[in-house]
Image (tube, rainbow, N blue to C red; front, side, top):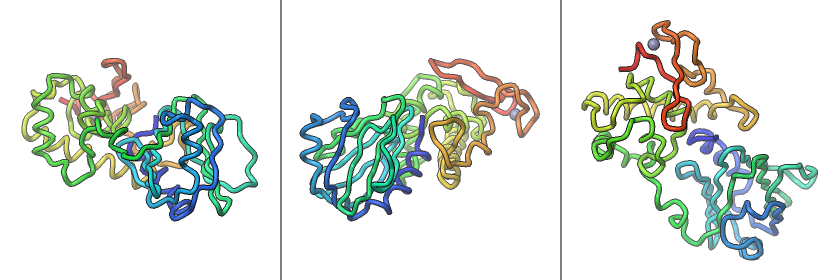
Length: 265
Ligand SMILES: [Zn+2]
């Protein structure tokens, strides 16, 4: 599933192609793709609106339009494709937004879990989300505060989008390795120094991920290079790049979790 760096990359790639352009029509070939409002209302309301900005909140792409905001969640396999009228429709195209200059923004999603929302206020969709880890308001003190209010293991905590938003399985495992913290540790058991290390690790792993256009390791998301920097993710059985110990994979909660028993305490 695309995580913060992959979604940021998609948003940055799409923006220059659609900014300041006006939507002329919208086709929907898989009705469930539209989360809200109804498909008919979505198609009616979106026409004539101009794109003011394209940004990201957690794993949501937020396209601010003249009146409303279009929010997109790629979930497992969603992708945004920019093209013109020469591109023939593809089997997994779920919605196509046409612009008046004939640019098209296609939402392609083989597994059909991705969703689009057209809302007046983006907070209706994203209001429940926790701290944006790269924002200046996400300080060491804030992280210490939210960690201290929880008793869960740190892996489950970091995956919880209502606490810190945007991390998924890859960047959680990679951040915990870089912080030297075992994923099974309890959040309220971390030392001050470990919280500082974790804060630094979360930010740096996301920043490096964005700088490398995210991670590509399956057929879903292409064009990224961060997979070449994985220290633990999907490296189970391979030697740790720091100490040589074999990387361990275990199930924690419902998720495969990768770590080094020697480097992480
Ligand atoms: Zn190691």
